[in-house]
Length: 174
Image (cartoon, rainbow, N blue to C red; front, top):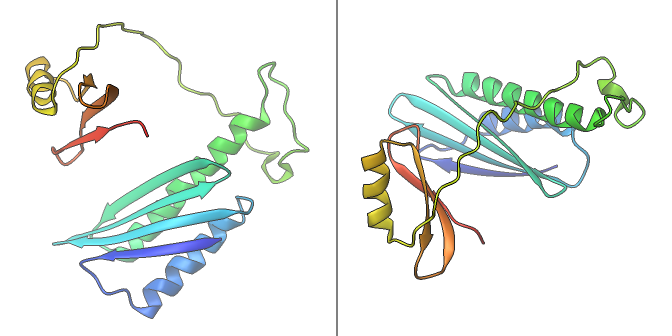
């Protein structure tokens, strides 16, 4: 597995790098090659944050953890990543008829089936062309954590969302 390390506001020691590589080798046994892991280690005051984005076969699996201890954050994020990989693989073990395909992934034969959450509501609404500033104002007026709008310059859909830290993010198609 290819591992790309990025450090923000911290100098990565050899011990930290070795620990990250050891933990990701454990994750690497769960996915087949080619796989690439982007690891971002960030320190903000007393918060130690680790983000891992795993790229394999056109899919991305992302996990992050924030604690006061860097090694604790690493343990938590690797555990989250392993759970996500197991859920993802389990989803493909069981077909729509409920029959399991044990021969595909034999090491998961004892795992319980993974069920996707049920869709409980679908809303339809007109999407209007507006600037980013207008979309932010509209999202705040609606008191929502996300807002979809049409960017008039590129004629593409955009999704504006509120991040966990209170700032805003935007998703745009490529």
